[in-house]
Amino acid sequence: MKAKVWLLATVLLLAAGQSSLADIYRKVEDGQVIFSDHPFDGAEKIDLPPLNTVPAEVAPAQQPTANAAAAGADYQIQILSPVDQQTYGYDQAIALQSKMQPGLRDGDHRVWVLDGQPLPVGRHQLKGLERGQHGVQLQIFDRHQKLLTQSSVTFFIRQNSVLVHPH
Image (tube, rainbow, N blue to C red):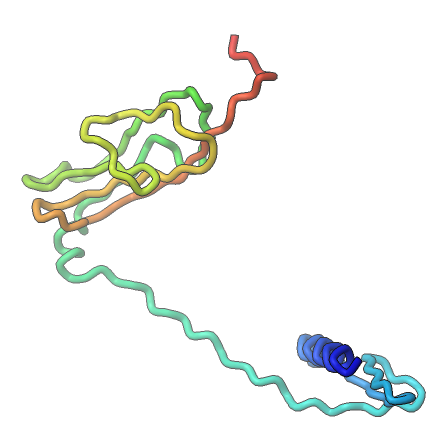
């Protein structure tokens, strides 16, 4: 029984902390402690200390290192296909297409990544993916395999329905 009273008291005190305008009243009746947010006969107002709060710290935005900025800052890449947040059919072929300025420098190369796994070189379309959410990234590396820049999109594959006939 005592645990229930403490639980009730804790809940009420926490609820009171959510509103700085709320007052808490307490009364002991036949060994039972009664709490309320409204005054009632025989209850006394409880003065609660202000809640302790700590302001959240905002982490500074990460800046690219000087080497990465110098090496890959001039590449501007955009994935054109698959389209970000687009839904595709299960049996639909999805071309991997991108736009990049400037073109690749000598020794630099690009890698397409599907759901965290690099795709084989020369694979230019996706087909037969499982239903659900998928992610594609286009990564640009230098000759030392250092990542220079990347772009990513999320797309979805819907499951075909037996109720919808493509013919």
